[in-house]
Image (tube, rainbow, N blue to C red):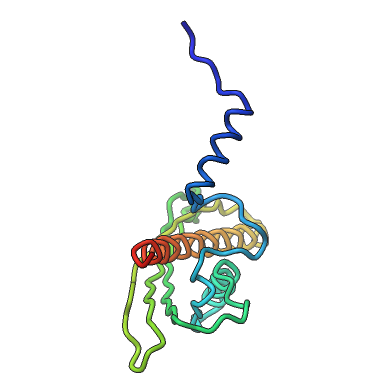
Length: 173
């Protein structure tokens, strides 16, 4: 006897039951501008260099920092990149580059003096091909790789912070 797929009605009923018990998915679509409770109280400090600025912007967007909520936490991030040549053309020039981005982050409360409440390290890697005799194509590929790395690091950091805030909220309530 084969297994049958659940009907759409059963799936909707299951989701309604889960929403009634307080279940909220951590991942998945949210309303525009919606963040996990507490994330809007995190302010992101300045991060040096161009990619640091891009990472800060991505973090602020994901955290909802511009909502006007009073700051309860300061997020300080250090960003570093490593480059590894992975492929070479016959003449010895690089043909493939792997980039690793590492973000060390520290979450402080806004008390005087500030107290470290959480920290972590996020890593992400990506790679791109270096086309022969096409400088602009290689530069565009490098920039796209760095943009993807920054987005992934921001996603990972916000996910960790959301889990931390949710666990804190669950323990308090």
